[in-house]
Length: 181
Image (cartoon, rainbow, N blue to C red; front, side):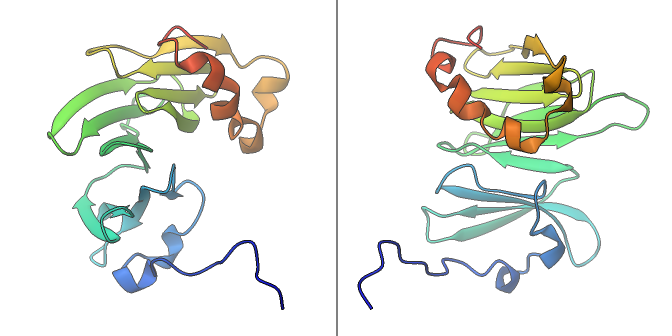
């Protein structure tokens, strides 16, 4: 058989690293680039944890106890975005940390539930909420997400597949700053 144009080979066995197989699903496991895998997992004792696999550092596995509902690693830098909910408060909150410097880059309480989120650039985070879409420019210290548009009409009904195209749709304008949409 002729040489195949693509070679598939396992890089890491997450189950062998102690990651619960139930975490191998959309919303719990993310891979924003070839640099990091982020997993919202449950530790053997039942506590909540996040697992970060650094693919550029020999597949180093780092487990941290955190009560986040979801994790999103930055595609370029050692930044982590955590999403969670607070009892009695509508919507989700998002916290972003620089894991190298231990600095909190931002925290935001969204007024609605976040149904999808994605890094558009290394410092621009898109938050797709139930009724609105926001861009959060973390290049600016102390910034808050800026509402880009309402999810009216067909966008209100849009499933995840539509939002997966968000980075490509925004890539031409995202580089112009937080106000770009």
